[in-house]
Image (cartoon, rainbow, N blue to C red; front, side, top):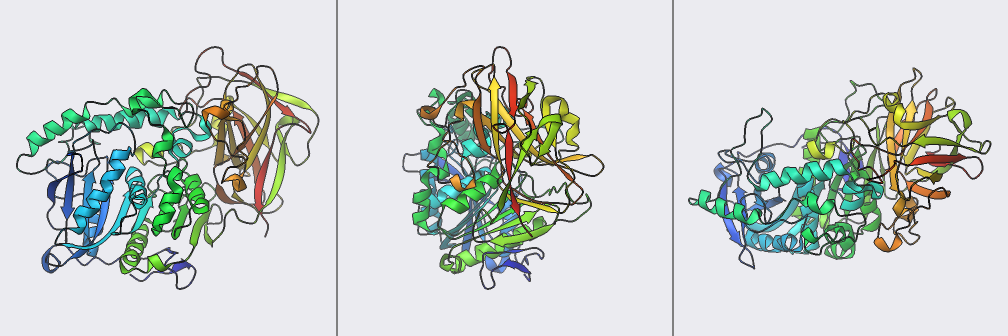
Length: 590
């Protein structure tokens, strides 16, 4: 693999923008087996190894633990084996407890019994004659987060992890950004995986899937028994419907809260393992970029963080400031080559000797990749006020207000950053003017020179509402000379969670909120209140001649639950003037 690398010379914490990894092996047959855990629960594992002259050689192992079926009945392989075995690795893919052909129950994400299993799976791999005793955890989406929890186990065999597009905190990055319930992903994903646990799935062509791969000669009978275990718990969506705060504990989750399955909450434990990590995120993939930045700030283990203009999974880039036909690097094969390079460095021990951490990020419009060892970048916060006449102005303007009657029926485009977390689909916001009926919009004068925004914009909203709670959405856009307005990033906040958490470890990024029940502060109807919120991070170079646009909304039925859920929708007043609404943008000077 001959790759040009972005980053510190001599460090493995770089980013190759081109090239592919050479393949030298064929994929051998899948061997399925059950491994019994400490409490008697059996987990289904698939083992794939190189064929031919490599079959008698001990190999380093890539481990993936999934809740999306480790394989499909009748198929000779799985996509993880097809990705890694040709490079000389053994690959173990397991159904996590309570899913696929594994026994037990899956009540919610990364329950403690599930994460404790990872130690025993690692023990089992080390004991196999084909194993070198060295393992790297890998995954995408849910499996990325199981790789994170492997590091929490601090197992001697684990030499590194490669979590691609994980959440760092599931509440803030995925299911309740800004405390606003992401009803689309909660319901759609929750019910989808419950179908998987019933061994039901429809293929893209409308045909019913043959189901998960059984294990062994008595596989069908064992699978039926495992499925009876799975039926004992309701969909995780039932729990989500009862959550407003991070520390809420729905009865269907057996007393657990979302704090119990957030890898952010065990940051110190993961740091103590010093597990080298390469993680990927997308500016347009839910909250994964926010999670990647917070991981970069909070954790001290050796890490390589890569944030690009991607959907969930990183296979479809989106840069609304570039020509649509522009090729954006690295492509999927090169991303995989980066992961192979990092895995090799973990197995050799080189990654474990790396010092510090590096973050690589893509700047929209400029089409350039940049590297840094600190975040946020050195920026000047420039203030833009919501002024009269729908203007976004550097001046405060006269005192007044703009009103918005929240319409619970209005929503967003369906191809948004949150939907891609469910279907890995294309993100495309189109011309933002198409949804102006749901929002207040404020537009600046034309920019006299290029303007780079890199970091976390912050919104300060002085607002009066007729209701005690509400969902507030703020969007940052760039308006092209022809009038088309393109999406850059957004922030949201449920009014109930407006209290600022002064001691947050992430306060350098902007105002943070605890989302704990003890800090809940309902609005007083018809009294002005200040809401401060931090946007999801972005890096974008906006050309001279463009305009900036900030839009305010109180509903997004496409993705988020309406707040309040019942009663008359809020009537909102957004105040203008010296004590009015404004945004602070992080500007990188030339």
